[in-house]
Structure formats: C-alpha cells, structure tokens
Length: 259
Image (cartoon, rainbow, N blue to C red):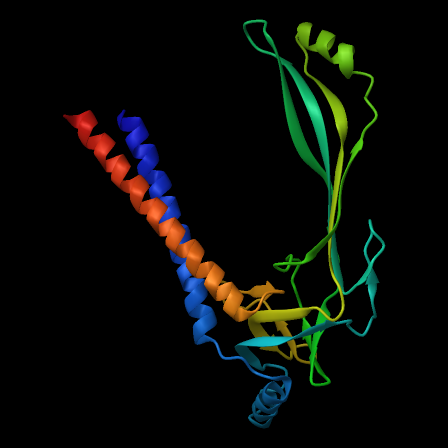
C-alpha cells in the first residue's frame, strides 16, 4: 500500500509543478507590455544612438495579423494550401507480434512517427501597415488550423498477417503495417496572432523570437491575450486542486501503511 501512496504523492507533485508553470505564464503575460512596431523602432533608434547597433533586445508582446515574409507565400506539402507557416506529420500504425519467455504470442497495436516536417522560414505580423518579423524557431503556434487528418490503409509487408504470427511462434518478432495517419497544420495569411517573445535586430529588421533567457516564456498563439490568460488560470486551478487531492490521498495511504 505504501507504494501506491508514494505514486500518488509523486503524481500530486507533478500536478502542482505544472500548476505553478501555468501561474508563471499568466504572470508573465500580465507583466509584459504590448508594444507597436513604431514604439519598437523608436526604442531601437535610441539603442543605435547609444552605440548598440545590432544589439537591441526587448521582451514584449506584439499583436497583428500574419503576413508573408519577403520570400512570399508558402504552400503546405499535404493539402497544398497557401500559407505563411505549415507543419505535417506522418505516423505508421502497425501490429507487433511478439513471443514471450513462456511461449505465449502477444499482439499489440503501436504507432511510430515516420516523417515530420515544419517550414523553416519565418513570417511576419502586420498592423496599421507596418510589419515585424516572427521567428517561430521550429515551434507550432497555438491554435493553428488543421487542414489534413486522414488515415490510409497501408500495404502489408511480406512478414505481416499469418507470416507475422508464424514468425512470432518461431521465436521472432514481426510487424504488420495497418496504415498511415497524415496530419497537417497551416497558418494562413491574415490570421490574428499574439506573440510574447524577445524583439531583436541582429539581422537588420526587427524580429520577435524566443527570449535568449530560456526561463522566460515564448508564446505564439492565434488566441488573444485575454483568452490565453483565462485558459491558463483555469488550467492552473484544476491542476492545483488535483495535485492537492492526490497529495492528501498519498499521505493518507502512507499513514495507513505505517500503522
């Protein structure tokens, strides 16, 4: 019984940890100011005047609508949709035949990712006719549109089916492909977006990217700051209650086990 008590305590601690992270995210969004492109350009000019050309850094929030970078619109690889950002994943679903030490054959269904790609180019945000670059750093923005979600039956390999079973019975392991799951997400031009990150001018134009300090949050979302804050607060409260409940139950089990 004491083992279950320790497991519950660890689970409770995990919930409380993630609740704390959600709380810090809310505080970061509330404490960080939202700046327009003209305001950032003025701050950059002051930085240049002080002899720090190319070394401007400012953690802030920026809002606007997604806009193509100078290289132009992209086209998603699965659905062929024009966008400013895209990402896709291909997963193989298969049956795995295995024979354990007692001679029993087990069949389990498993999934593995066989291909995954995210567009490497950044995009821009535009507001009042002015733009600022966005470097997502390979991350998937929150709330992007899913444009592909399909499953296609795959051809069975020679060792699949009855051959897979026979292979397992003879002491080997065999896989039988069931099919492939194709999923794709895009960010279309003109999508409202909120970004919390660090603005810099190391490549010339202003770009907002993940903060150099990894302890600071980087938020890319199609939801507004108010929506994100409300969601994070709800998640924080839920995790806190669950964590506290698990911790109390874990302590109770440990007390009972020691009596």
